[in-house]
Length: 94
Image (cartoon, rainbow, N blue to C red; front, top):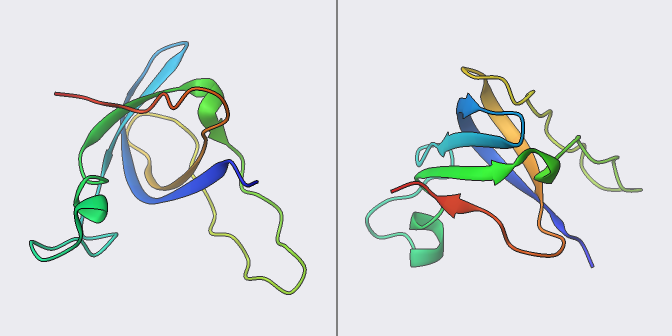
């Protein structure tokens, strides 16, 4: 089972020694008012554990090249990969 997922368009808004805060860009995932709820829920500001941020996975035989990902540094924008093994620890920021 795959436990790593791509978040295609984020901006890192802050970091600590153990966490990373980011916002997602609804335009990057094409969310609109008529989009399904699961797509609209991905738009927002989140906090994750640094250990959940993963490097770009290797290309699977015959598959597409995975998008490049950014370093978790405040101000960076782009894609990140999150590992959801164990507890689902992605917390929306109110």
